[in-house]
Image 1 (cartoon, rainbow, N blue to C red):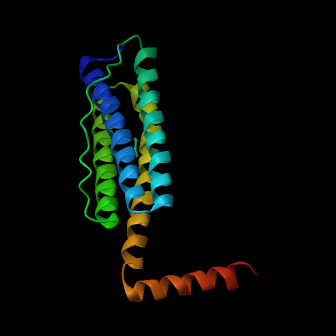
Image 2: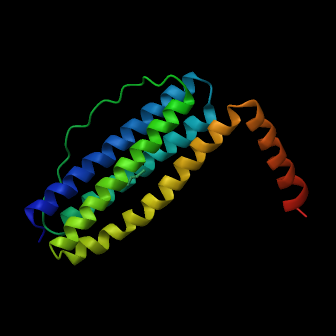
Length: 166
Ligand code: OFO
């Protein structure tokens, strides 16, 4: 049985993951208007991942005999001025998710809810992956945005072709 504190926080996380799915889907639409089709495809696929994160929580809550709640999801405003600004927003969003997961882990430990603590470990590992993924994308976008950066990238590409493939 989940305590009220844990249940509220888990339901809050259900909503957060749903909001993430909406945000990334909105981002993919904006990216399409900028002809960044592959980045748009990435965000669209990532919106699906967030939906899966949401469903995993939804199932866990229901399996404990508690009631998962589908809350209202805020409408994301597509007001990014550049793809870099969008990537920064996405990275910051992931940092906020990590914080929320960490807070849940903290509470589970404090309440000695070891089942929830164990369940959340998947999210802890996942957030490590997601932060890495989004920060490396942002980093690459920033590099390619400068002339020197483009030259560096070409060099790196040459290394990939000539050294790594031999
Ligand atoms: Fe992108 O993260 Fe969900 O949990």
